[in-house]
Length: 230
Figure (cartoon, rainbow, N blue to C red):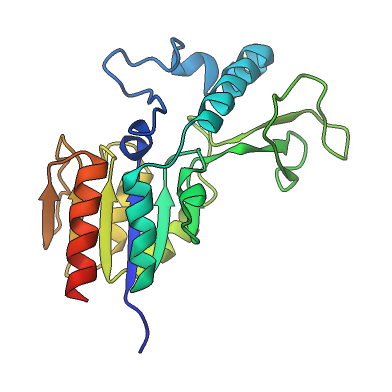
């Protein structure tokens, strides 16, 4: 018998519990920088060194962080379900916890790519410097989807969401598009669980259960329920 498919849409709230800062905190800053200065293509053109320094700092921070209970319990779901994780996060905490099927909508902190050929992507854990180039001689940039850029994995994510038998939304405010629109790729009859202290609402959808808890508490509760039920 084929396993039921669970699709998880995860956001910054799940990583925050591992110590990774989010830019949607109350001050709206990311490591004391405005988004426009470090996370847009215009910012890259204006001041490449500032952008590189920013992501080098974030890369070091992420290396020091570890997966938390929420990441680990999502892995437990794979005992009885086929699980696909669609994450808005650029860290690798889902993978380090052991999740096997992870789609990164907004890019990956531990990869870089060519500014000449976007298909030239390299694994990268050290600092990225001006003068670090691809095999074609072009400067490398963070493999991050900056604000205003297209989201190349959106089509893949949409196809996964449309096949879900159960949808779990965890640690996301559901206000960042196009990612927030993924909940509407699933059939309206599909059970949906939203785990977040702020309880973001899914509009125009039925069969939704809201769990007003932080990721570690809510995911553990839900996973234990689902494993016991199936």
